[in-house]
Image (cartoon, rainbow, N blue to C red; front, top):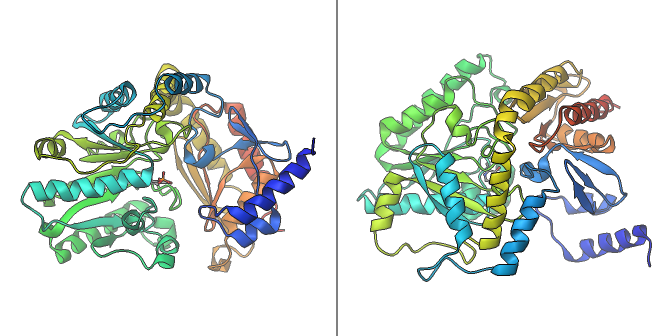
Length: 450
Ligand SMILES: Cc1ncc(COP(=O)(O)O)c(C=O)c1O
């Protein structure tokens, strides 16, 4: 038997030869060697060195029930044994997607009673974009084609969802965005270095949004996409009054409001859907990630009765994927959602773990390398600065990646984004593990200026 080390070396070599990774600088990665993660256990994953690492990112903002949820594994095994796959084409479907669609509707804001399944967050948003076009066409308003989307938004990687995304580094290498995606400001007060208070900056964003809508022609705008909390763009928490103001503007101009809840749904901020917290009453909610806790891929586009009605009566609905409503993925989703419900995880985040996490995050603000913290429920971020302070930052400082490596060496995983770290642990994390997570973060940041 070869030793673990030589197996790791072989895998790293094969990886270098054969695999292209998502969102990765391959020369950097292969310079140090790809991490080959071996196992998961609760809130920990175990890497190629056998070291348990406390996963402060829940995989990729998704492993909400932790890595060893027996209920999901058993449900998927039972489904795979009985019927691994059958499509929802041909006037057919299977039990699992029906039950998941029912669960989603029963926990969602009132009007969202219909789900179109897909395989990812990108596909959920892509599906929303197509449904919106189809909807306005059926309503005789095909001129409503433009889509409003925000700076620092992240909505996926297809051509259209990269165009929705408001991160230049995602668009520039592919000569995107496509035409018809109209950028409005996201409420990133810190990033804007605004002299205004966060609330006043939020108001400025709304005024600017209104100005852009009027300049574009409100009758040409189909929908607005917004994550309640902007995740991959840097955990941007909306200032007070901003989201309700945005919703109100959409209502005023008859623009559909899409809430991208790929990160925020299913308990992350202490509600089944973040849209409830701000009473957004969206026309569409997009979900993925936490719907299965990442055990299997699944996306969902939940549409209001008003949108569903013309689509359901509009003849042949010519959209869908081979794996729309995949029974094994939906079995994972159902077991995961029931687990979240049965263990009261949403309430636990709202009343206990969320406030505890927020308090620990607030303490982190005292660290000399931290210039701002923000968070809500079990999602948070810390903006980092070099020794010379914020003014010494340069476009190549990339303190986030440096910090996340240092924190990993201290036994916890967080995500580096620009000059910040993002934290988003599993919802099953304990208070002691939150302590340990922040202790690792502090120890890592202690070395940031070395
Ligand atoms: C808010 C949001 N929307 C969409 C996506 C895209 O999801 P996926 O990577 O499953 O395509 C992500 C992924 O991080 C996301 O955070």
